[in-house]
Length: 426
Image (tube, rainbow, N blue to C red):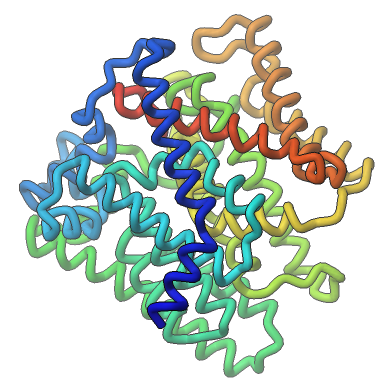
């Protein structure tokens, strides 16, 4: 067993080289003075990380007049308090958990070197090495996906239980589990038993969180009351143009996630009504597309409105890109044969259509109309460039994808510095 573990780690040398490369970039950014950010390790406790730290120190406190820590699930804070780590320590711990989970995922789904590097360079992965829940959720979701791949009920149930206790994903997990069962060849009785079992486990985790909060605050369903009262998280009729917190500096991330989320929704509908399709995906990939669809719809319908009156999709990029579900969906794309010109044209038109939903025809935040059009034109060309490189056999063979890897790592380092300096990322 020990020898096999050592051999496996030796095979993952690129993962460790990637970590060294990121550390090098952080060092260069810090010394270069290119970004006038006030960077320090105290910046690790920004935004949601502040609330997890607050929960660790004080336990749950409910308020119906101000934002309070009952708007967050307890698992990360429990782990943080149990380990006694500092903000930097828990960030390193999260990074290790993520890398361990990634190694498990890459082994089970046979990632090649190109796939490993491209996935590890995703800019939104900064949330896996700050005091956020992304790394713990990535671990739980990896167990779930491996269980679905192996058809191992124990792994599936553990993944569902842990994932639903780490983040409020019961509302996504249950429909996604129903989705894969509807597409399976099992008997109706088997489907009913599995759906019931999965749903009960996910709801148990939700109830555990509710009970913990009730015991500490005396308020039943304190999480949902906090989200509704202080964060305006409730069902809303969408208003356009769409927006996100941070404006153009983050819109490229949340906007691209929204576009890909709409594609995932379209694919799920296609799979559901075209069961005899030539496209054959296993349960892990089907669940991944369904989860991404659910995350997109949840943010789109429940995140409320911005100050300008448009629907906000604030934070979608972290719920979307920093998950193993996106990794598997991205893997399916990388392993596709080149997409036809007609389908490429449709993708471009759909992308332009999404930018119109974000107000590409008008001004956004501090941009005037001309700058807005230029912004979305550059964004369209950038996304198209990524697509062509990743879906073009010649470009892949010539290793042009390495330029994407380097560019993504630089963006990841940039977003990390934004987070440390108190600038919104997600």
